[in-house]
Length: 420
Image 1 (spheres, helix red, strand yellow):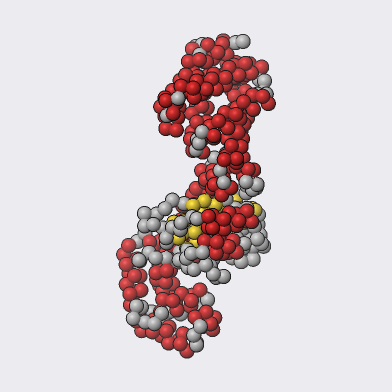
Image 2 (cartoon, rainbow, N blue to C red; image 1 turned 135 degrees about the horizontal axis):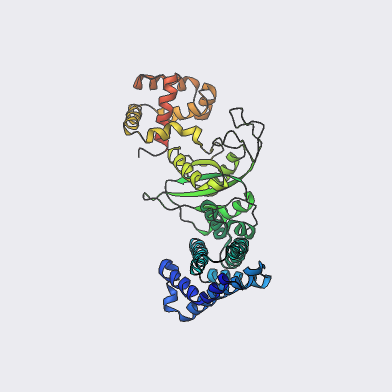
């Protein structure tokens, strides 16, 4: 055994103790090691074993055996059984890896540079075997989660791991029988009032998750009592028939139009309506498509879109809103004096009979008078009267370019609840 490996063997005990002390000091969930001597001894033994096997295997570039991987997996099982969170598990793996690299560097410096060949052999072993060890630890961790927590909670853990970029998503996806996708439509259902997640609602959402194979989780409750359901709707990347054409309407289901990342793929409205009906409450829906490595950023976009989108009852017409639908309202929300001006326009419409509802239907039906009148269940002459009334009260023609730009923004801001 060369000098570098001998130095690592000599320092193994001290380095293992330092690792345990670091866990206790820097990771709150390891505070129990101070009060539980048996658990501290077990943790120290694990740390010693890992260093001993590193010194035994790395000189000849020998792989961790199946027995070794089984022992590492048992460590993951032990931590999961103790209730360790995914965030803490990831932090533990990061701390362990950083300390091992530090120890290699310290051993090299202790040998005044040491043998470069030994250092290269150590690093060539450390990377692939470290990856195998981490994989085994994840598998053991997930095995316990699968036995101990309900299906919907496992799905929520998968969603969180995808949003945080945690590699454990692969094992969690296998545990809940889902395939990971390269692209997702991150979709936020904003609820003005957070529902009580009772058994019925949990069963409804759980059944839908199993059908559409999509990870979901409840987002944090808002300060105003609002809530949100976050769904990661999997997509298959590729250029559909409509890609590059400027619309997403003719894109085949489950295909992401490569050139239109912020327009909705064709299958989303059906899935969104299914989730909205399961929720059974008025909601606003925002969606943003992104590759799996950028889901956290997509979630922030989808949240902002959902905040700007109108709140509607679950119905056959409910659809997800993308950036293309509410980019005006998103910009307006950040310019208070413009928002105040639009709100003043909305106040002028208050004396009229259902004028905001009429304008909403008018623009949702692309200003088609017959379709709008049918949707409102009124005669076209009644519709014409209401549109004239809008023009009288605001001095803006709803069918003009100015009217579409101004009044459609007024309607959406009003229906989003931003002015409540």
